[in-house]
Length: 354
Image 1 (spheres, helix red, strand yellow):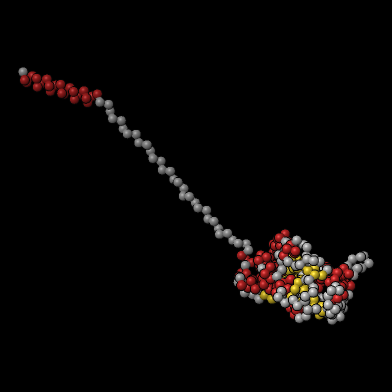
Image 2: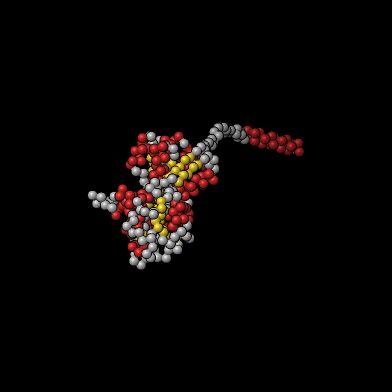
């Protein structure tokens, strides 16, 4: 009996194992997802070339060689200041600044062809342009500032504070020879006259603005030749292209009178007094608003061929125009109108592109 039970249990277990083996589902093979290798190109970093400064070639320390500038005694202190700064910034060549008067400066530039830059306290004349053309030069004008021509007397003069243009014209043409003729309240003392020589642009300007209008030609216009003759024919008058000589002459007597660029008055304001003209004193405000009647432009001139053949000259003029406004008031003059200074920079750009 026990044997029969064990046999039945064996059969049941065996059948269970058989059914388990036959009924179990087959295990599915794991699906393999193919890995696709994606080639990622390396990111290329663009190479940025260093930015080149197109003006580097005109830096003071990038040029050398000689520079010769000559002309106006009025522009002289301004050009001298810029030349000194140009050298301080690294220019190692030779730079010459000669004070010989505007007319003589144009003669050296346009006739002799000996200078690279001509300093001028007036615009170039047609006859001077013709002289330049004859030697193959075409002068380019660069406006660099404004001068308020100063009429001065000694600091010891206690009677003159203001004069009209007509009174000045008569003094410098010899129509008034004593101070009481100018004004009955002034002393009856001889007027001692000091002024720039005929080669000076300051002389030309003063004649055209003050003296020549007293001498009208047949057309009723100011006769410049007659005015010049009257000034130069004034007995006892002292003329010099050196404004420092004029300063010394005026400050030496309470009865002296003279005129020159405002910078020379500023430099000697302790020994001199500036005379108001038509009731207006020369200063930044009256120059800017156009009320001072003896304000005038200041220039330098050069030529495109010179700028091309002598990079040092082009560099100096560029430096001059870039730095003039930072120095001109300290020298004793006034900045040019912004549009005029920009016009000078544009003229330089055009000339150096040729």
